[in-house]
Image 1 (cartoon, rainbow, N blue to C red):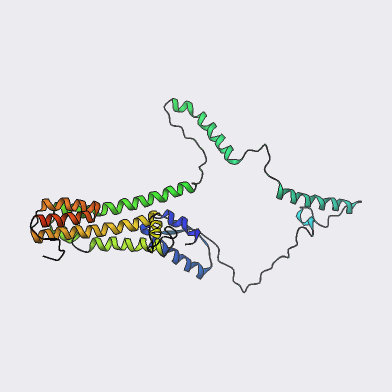
Image 2: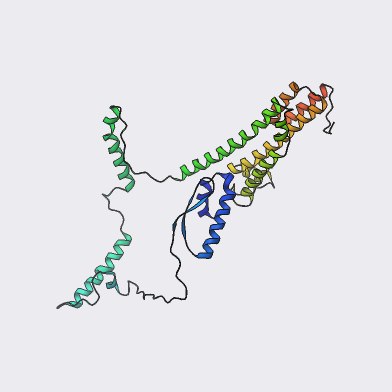
Length: 315
C-alpha cells in the first residue's frame, strides 16, 4: 500500500476498508480521466467527499510562453529590486560592483544562517503563552467559574494516531464478540425455539463472519495492511501475522465461527440422542471459551449417560 493512503485507512473502521478502497479506485479513475486534483475528506465509514477542486488543466495545443531563466550566479543584479539599467552619476561601475557583491553575500547569508540565539523556538513560545493564560485563569477557577482559555490547538502526533487506530481495532473486536453472544444464549436458553433454528442452525453466522474473515485476511496477506512478513508457511510467519491487530481479528473471527458451528452441532446432536439439556449447557460454555475442551466434554458425558460413544456420525 502506498504510504500516502495509510492515513485514510487509519481513520476508517477496518470493516469498511473495502468500501474505502473502492471509492479510492473510483477517484483515481476520475483523476486520470480529467487530470484535476482534489482535496478529499474521509469519514469513519469509508465515504469520500471532495472538499476543494483544482482548475482544469490547460490544453496541450495552446501556445504558452516560458520566460528564460538566468542563474543568479551569472547575474547577481537580478536578485535585487533595483533595475539592471539604473542610471548613475559618476562611479557607476564601482557602485554596481558593490551592489552585486552585496547581493551574492545576502543570498549566501540567507541560506546558511540559523535562527537568532535570543529567539526561542515556536513551541517554547506556545508553552509560555499557555502557562500565562492558565495562571491568569486561576482566580476564575477558585471562584467556581469555568473560564474559556483561547489557546491554539496542535495537530495530533503519530502516538495519538496509533492509539486511535488501536481503539478502532478494539471496537471491531468488541463488536464481533458481542455479535455471537445472542447465538450462544439461544442455544443455552431456547434450544428448540423457531428463532434458534432460523438464526443459529442456518448459514447466517457462517456467512457474515466468513465474509468478515475473507476481507480481513485479504487485507493482511494481499494488501499489505497487516504485519510485514506474516504468513501461514512457518511458525515464525504465523507469529508475525498475529503481532498486528488486524491479524488478531483474522484469527479471532476464525475461532468464533468454528466454535459456534461445533456448539450448534452439539445442541442438534443432543436433541436427536435425548441427552438432557442440563448436561449440554456446561459443554456449550466450555466450547465457547476453550473450543475442543467443550467438544471433548460433550462426547464424554454422552458416553457416560449411555446416549452414544465418541462417534461423530449422525444418530
